[in-house]
Image 1 (cartoon, helix red, strand yellow):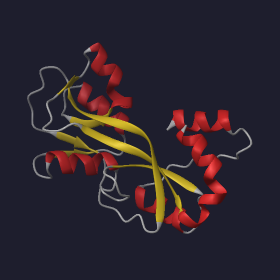
Image 2: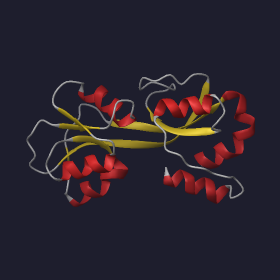
Image 3: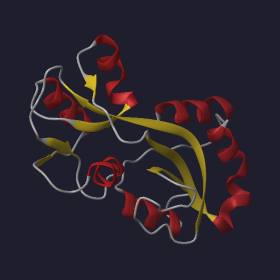
Length: 174
């Protein structure tokens, strides 16, 4: 998200940008009711809501791909899966790719999960932006997955507001 915000700021310095962190459903409700002009969220597939939430009457465009890795500390052989809360894109992706059974420990933040994994306390499905450096330097290792795990970073907006937002949306996606 920081790269998207930077692109928008560089291309449209006249835009008043406010960044808030919201869970998926409150974000979609705020965009749908007009209290937010647009929102960013992670999803899969070719339609809004493929991960299992209701996108309502919103339009979207994918602006980046976020790769996910199942990571562990080298030599870890336990069975604990560390996950984010229900409703989080990373949790939904983990449930879909790895199933919902087994021993799970839930944490509120990706950075906390990353720290626990680095201490050898479990495995986790985490985004490249959080673990790419750890994979490069060998602090963490990627575990095999049956399929490539990716999420799309999507900008969502009300379809009836598209004309008002068109230039901003182009700047975000460029």
